[in-house]
Image (cartoon, rainbow, N blue to C red; front, side, top):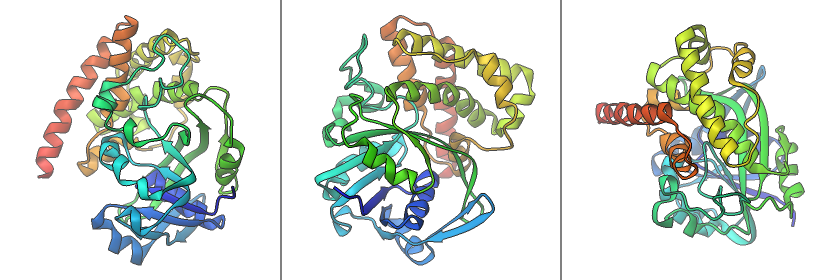
Length: 328
C-alpha cells in the first residue's frame, strides 16, 4: 500500500515539525488537535524555523477524528500524559491497512508486549493501569518511534528546530514487515530514519538522557548548558543515568557508554530546553510517569535499587502539583 494520507495526532513541537516536513515532502497531512486549537491552526498553519529556513504549512485540522476520515498512516505525538484520553478517540482514523506510529519518551505501554526478556508480556501500571491505553491499539499495526530531535516553541507560536534529527522506528515484536515503506515516508521528509534490530534498545538509550536532563531541568528551570556547568548538578545527572543503566542491564540490553563519557560529549550542547522544562514553563502536565515511574516499577521487579530516581519522582510530583495549581 502506498502512503499518501498522514494524520498527526497532537501536533505540538515534535508533531508540528513532522506535519510541516511531511507536507513539504508531498504528503496529504491532517492534524487532530484539541478544540481550542482548531481555529488558530486552520488560519495560521504551522511555521517552522529549520536550519536557516522558514517553512510554513497548513495541514487539514479537526478536533474530531471522524471529520478527517481513514488514513494510510497515523502518527501519535501526544505526550504520555494525554494518551489515555487520545487512544479511544482515534479509531475513526484507522482503516484496514492503516499503520500507527507512536512517538514516545520513556518506557511506553507496549514495551514488554513483544520483548524477549524476564518481563515479557508485563503490563506497566505506571502508564497503562487497567489496560486503558493498550485496549485501544492493535499491536499488528503498531510501530514505536524514538526521536532525538530538539524542537521548541517560540514566543510567537512558531517552532524552532534546535538540534538533531534522528528517528528510530520498530514494532513491539521487532518484526520488519512493512517497515521499509513506513521508514521511507520519514526519510523523504528529511528525517535520518533507521529501523534497528531491537527498538527496545533505542527506547532505553534515549531514556538514559531523559531520566536525568528532563527531571533536573524541570526542577531547576535551567537549560542544558547551565546544568552541565555546575559540577554537583552534573554528578546528579550521572547518578540518575547510572540507575537507569542498571535497569537497562537488568533487562538484558546494552546500557551504553559510561555516564562520564556521555557528560563530556554533552558539554557541546547549547542553551536548549528539554521538553519537560518547556512543559513546566507552560504549566502543562509532566511526563514523569513514563520517564520516572516506569523505571521505578521495572526496577522493583528486577530487584534493582534506584533511590535517586525515587526521590526525583517524588519531588517532581509535588513540583507539578504546585505548578498546575498556580495555573488555575
